[in-house]
Image (cartoon, rainbow, N blue to C red):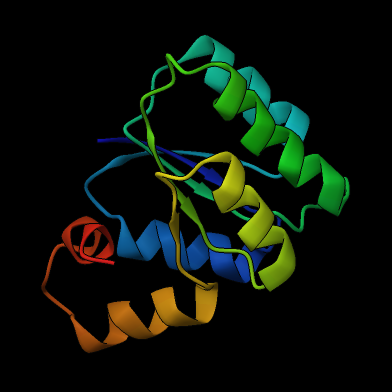
Amino acid sequence: MDILIVEDNRVRSEFFRNALQGHTLTFVTTAMDAIAQLRDKDFDFVFLDLDLEDGLERGLMVVEHIGIHRQIEAQVVIHSMNISTAVTAVKILPDAIRVPFAQLHKMFQLNAGVDFIERILEC
């Protein structure tokens, strides 16, 4: 699977690198880079942190971009720890899965050997 990971925290990025081994991963740290990637390539999944180095409202710009461009068929997983912003994001993208990063991390630890993507789809 082609997966876009929008995350500006190195520790979290390393977590995704380990949890999603065997998939094609593209990492970006800003909303503008995420939007550029979404314009240029089709992804199966987008793991999206909303609290990015270029500002919280910028993370929502990615959500709005996906919402406006309905041809983007990627399953979006919002893993932001900012609950109020994540709730806003899910209102824009009702099919998005909202799983705080701490829960993602715990899911991975508890289900070693189980396909991480399958576990997320069960949320």
